[in-house]
Length: 363
Image (cartoon, rainbow, N blue to C red):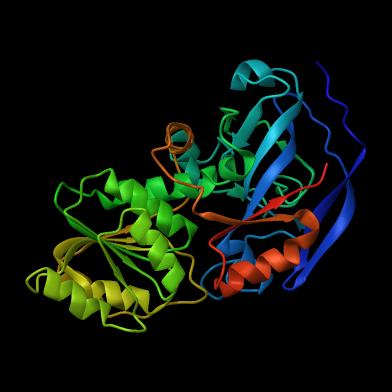
């Protein structure tokens, strides 16, 4: 059954640092292989806050800019299918009225990485909310999933505000998989934002011997306890390195996952991790971080892994939410209207009350 689609919609458009505007824009048209969705919920990510404040994604001497303004913001989302281009229903097993999510990267399928199945490192690297025309984002009433996208049907028993966390949960799954946690390992996760709290829950599935959470916010550490942390550490009141070494007979943790984006968390991890341990760097930092590389090689011979996006993790994320194996209810702390996006950005930036802020576009 056809769903009425308006000609115009409201969208939050990025023009530059501190220059986000709620505008009226034309609802996208779908072509072959494309999917049009009505956005039911869309999250505000820490990277959205960094973009707003002009950090990192606009480019530096080390990293070229990868945002193309003006572009509609938003890469965490869930939508209701309202139109399907030719072949899209069969390709994605979707029908009008379904809830559907799309992976945050839209692969080109032509570059070396895409041809090898490493699509999350696509050379073109079109990510929703960052690339004008090719990957317009979800801070809008409607959005289009392009023909190259990876789309999945989402069970309707998952509430939209929770389904909007599929992307950060999938990122957490990938980072934990990169950590290669073994039974009985002492695992430390630094940063108890939404993704860190999801990492905590996924890491628990791996059977660690001790699961440690680090954060500067007491309310986030309390959430970490409720979601499976054995030990929580606040660096403002105690020394995380000393405490982890004391708990491990001075050897250090087996695995350290950095999910805070705080520069100090990197050398902290290098100090507390044992020889031959595994360090996973997930965060987007606001600038370069200097460390003593001799620790990585000569002193400890560490395994250093990066973690980017969420390859092959969306089906797992959807299943974990559906089955209740991961708790997102405690993580989604605020639901705001699209018009309140500035308030949402500020809530995430301050982090004193919020964990995950979700925008609900008006109909």
